[in-house]
Length: 285
Image (cartoon, rainbow, N blue to C red; front, side):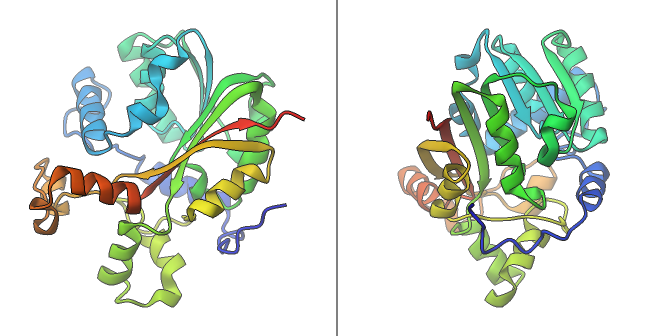
């Protein structure tokens, strides 16, 4: 069995993770409009895909028309809605009831409540919460690295994906520009504290209890040690805006990226991106 040498968060209680995401669901502040309104959700979606423009290409929303999708860690439902919008039937799970509350509102606002089933679940024990079924796609974007035992989630995913189905996950890339930035800016180059620094500063709200990061090799092994064959692996996404301006809904590129040609910035993202995106299929025995 694959054991990640960087697993330093195994003893963190899941309740601490739940409290963290309940206190501020991911992307909840992507709009100042009233939460739950269509204008709010439209702005949240625009803002998310403007900054993380690689997500639609990775998710391939249109590919899953008429298919069954299991999304692990739906958050407030941006990707969830886009799967449904393109005709998929979605089962969306999340540990945070606050996130699910907003995601359910979103489904109602857009009229997709009959295409989406929401379930509060601990992904490490998915089969305890989600009725047994098999799915064409199991999708998890930026989620499983925040649970104390990511390998347990992969074990659970194996039970829910069809024999010829697809798994798409994003985990954080250890050898990335963001990790270097965290190490220099917040860690003062104290590399021996890198794992804790990554957890502390991985998200917009500091103090995330659990954040694993993976090299390309470790990400591949995480899946391949649990019955999957990785068919595509890539890294993407460097956040290039001034944080204080971004928080005020202004998109000001930081000086050291401002003069970088577009092709050069894209090359840098594909080399040192924060998002390690893996596509895999079950190994057929």
